[in-house]
Length: 249
Ligand code: PEP
Image (cartoon, rainbow, N blue to C red; front, side, top):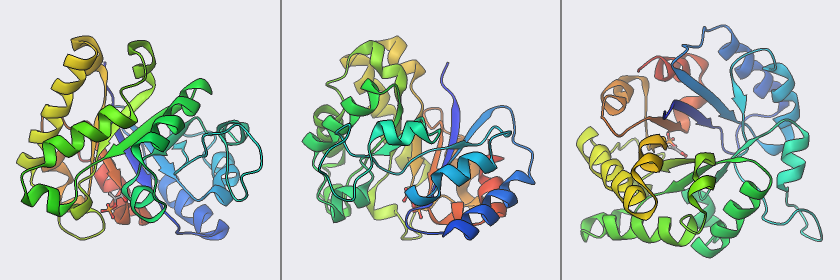
């Protein structure tokens, strides 16, 4: 059974004290039983965050990781390091990683493999740019990202995957895909997973939408049959807004 998930991607925001304050704000709210709630603070704050929400259903996840276990990779953090501070889920392929850090589909495929080998859950992000959509190429772009970055794993490993469709033109721009646009791609992706793997895999995988989700639009986005939640950027930085989104199912 696929899960409803709301995950907050805090990006490079919040120092240790701010992380603590935001988590304490979230802890004041009851978490509905039908939603898995995740937050992704910066690497430096993961351990403290894990300790702060230890007794709650909130899961602390990472925004990125390196594909190697260890070694001479200055400035990087590996899957075993994340696991050692209680992190079992990692976001891979966020469009900011693709754009600003030149992460290719081939590199992302290596990261996915490394995460799975370390028994981690992966939130795999993909999505087209505005120019792709204007040229009517959004389906092909999304398909290529999934085929080249993710579909090398086998059917059994797919239970560790959460998909996150994030049209680049909607991230941090205030512009949201319409509920119809989101459903159209989510349904396309679910069918692609079915033809690549099986109906069972496609029925069980959660597909999140990301791109300027706010309390005001979350309900109509989450109401779509193939939308199982959201990856939230800006609105995840305010406890009230984030919890309003969590409660939008
Ligand atoms: C994101 O960065 O994953 C995101 C969806 O950001 P925002 O909600 O701010 O558009």
